[in-house]
Length: 336
Image 1: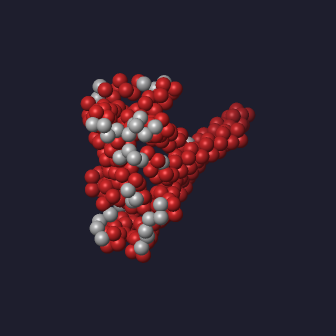
Image 2: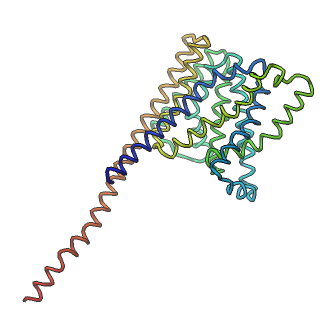
Image 3: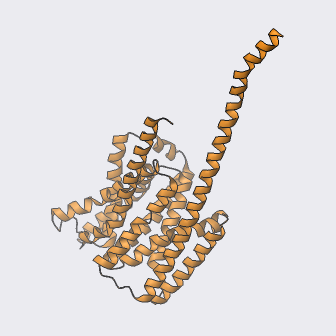
């Protein structure tokens, strides 16, 4: 690789890292946004988020001019069904998260995204028949112990965390089957959500319970920006995903729950008794094990790839060397 290509590659990676930090940073700081939408209830906020998200991603698609995928998707009922399932699951995830933040459960919500990788691994074993390495088994076991400790600390199972983790893991599994890019996938999902969301908002307005417009222009504008709050981090994430190695992206994903956890303690002043600290410590231990194992495997794979490339390059150089030597040998044979 020449210096120009190497410089371009490093520049692309820097752009990817900046987009990754931006995406996970925005997701991590979003608990500051949802309380601004009060006195709107969680379901009304959710309905606005679903409706305005379609508007936001539709505008984005107008700029990038990618529409061919929509025709292909419409002609594939199975994929359309998977999109509908993804839309239903992410609706549960979004709605519960908004309710959690606005009712003082930011720390418990952050726990859901901490344990999400563990739930994803467990679903891979149970649903896809994947085999785990010993370190991954240890991480899952520690994560299960953490849930039990937290259940003791809360006096109940941490159901908010579990529903958030399982819904988002299911969402990721279904999106993998649909196989659409982030922007296109969100467009399809919000298209499914749009009519029910608008129908609910119309009904809420007819009941006289809607806050859109009744709380002033500023409040209405904030409700409209829920689409931007949803779409912009996803666009940044998409820009990062094509430029940053998957192992790096996997590490960046922990930024969002870390920010949420810190906001819950330092800004919202939620309680953290000792048993809750113990549960979180076990979760972080499990994630540390997963991270160590992922980095170890990535390093081993990189060494294997480099060795394979070296072997290919060496094999390719031998015929060239042989062909370069053959004219001299032929000349000697002619002289003899």
